Length: 153
Image (tube, rainbow, N blue to C red; front, top):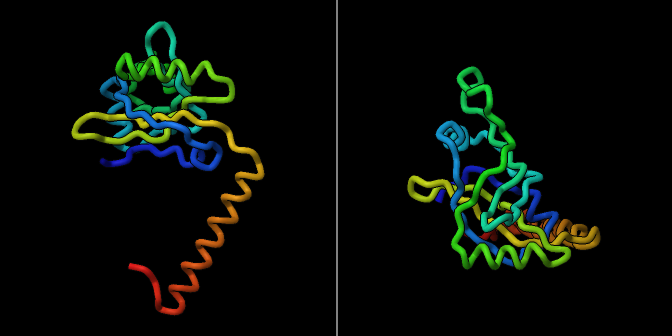
């Protein structure tokens, strides 16, 4: 699995409840652009409408600016390919108050591009501070272990 795009802020800002993998319907120039790493998942989310699942507000920059069709829209809605069972689960989560569905990352699986979706709940400010403190203490521990020559392999 080769990660193409990663939504790093999502893991900091949200608490993950459940994760799904889904296919995504793309145009050829979008696939080329994604393989070059041109895009962003920040600020994007997923919605279920009319029996279909869509990825909204994800940016996929044009592959070659001058060869891009005039009607190309980098932030267009893209259809996600999920099973009916998964779609029903996602629709149920979407209706619950305080829950959101966001993309965590895009990755290559063989020759196809997949999206890892997560049902999330927003973290409070004190939870974010706690995560920062935990990360800093772990970094300090690794630094002191490395200094003493007892670094884990």
